[in-house]
Image (cartoon, rainbow, N blue to C red; front, side, top):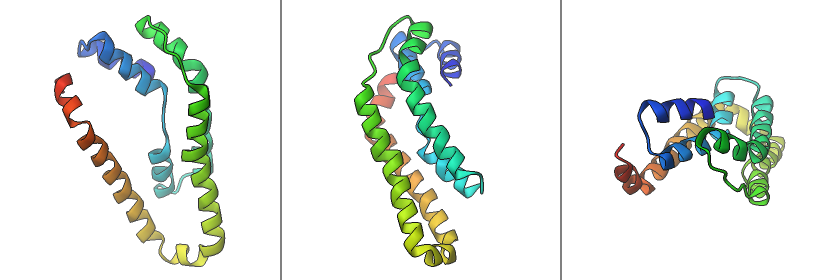
Amino acid sequence: MPLAAFVISKAFDFSTELTFGMILVGAVSDGTASNVIAYLAKADVALSISMTVVSILLSIVITPYLTLFYVGQNVPVPASSILSSILKIVLAQVVIGVIVNYFFNKYIEKNQDLFASLSIISIVFIIAIVVVLNESKIHTVGL
């Protein structure tokens, strides 16, 4: 993904700052949405979650090197806050999901289609919020 971000940035002649941001977004992946898509596709959700955690942990080490390689600038990575985010965003959700599934398995199985639809709507809603909150920044970049 960092390579794709770099190629796209060069193809559209982005500024160094925007290229730097693209590399960061490409280097530090977040797989919460991909985990939901894996679930909806009836894929191996445990594998998807494991890959998310591993990629985030690797990004702590690799991101400074990737930004130095592609943009020629180093970026400090706040490892402790990233690990804290992993615990909150990924691990806590998985633990809560396992507990809820344990106690409400029959109800969840009966309403599986409803919960799948709710997760899709939730992802679209979150993306819409992010876009609205960053609308002014999008216009200043010229996209």
